[in-house]
Image 1 (cartoon, rainbow, N blue to C red):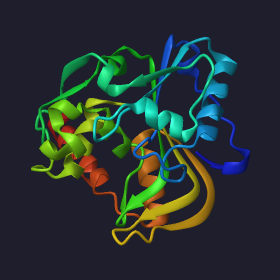
Image 2: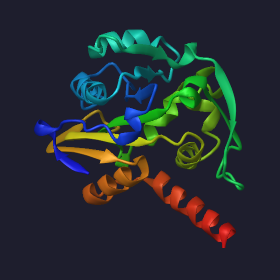
Image 3: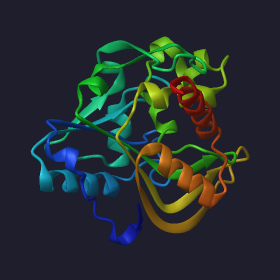
Image 4: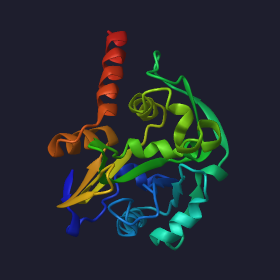
Length: 241
């Protein structure tokens, strides 16, 4: 679904009405405000939408690539929401989870926070953002749920693999229910520091793969991890046949 960003109201889907715990994963990849990260305005809109239909516990979870406390980034970004539990990935209990793919693209198991497994509804949000032309949307946002202690600062222990393949494996191992792309503006982060921002005025909401695909197609953004998801899906369908 595509909405005008100025008129966006989060209509919580029916499963949220039955949820006891809703987990929201924003993009807190830096302490720069939107469009580099998820805006507090969008998070507040999502929280309000959940509370209209549910008394579920609402939790926001974030992690930093260098292992510094997420609380400092939350503060810099102005994240301050009443009756919302703010979590830091590095303080969570870790659980080894098998990649459900019979032939993983890269990694057969991931160490992920237990709260992901114990939540009833999972939402990942991201800006409409690319880095050197490659999209970093709602599925890419899941990378910072991984353990820095296990996978290294800036995920250096994953760099021997194709990080786009890692993201595809994460999509299957941590299946989030919903993705929301904050597309009021489109940001392209460039190596020379001359980042480019253009106005788009849209919010995209839906299953993470489908909205990442819709946006990358519409905006002509490269998102190789989606092609690897397609590859894995094709293998799954072949096995079922």
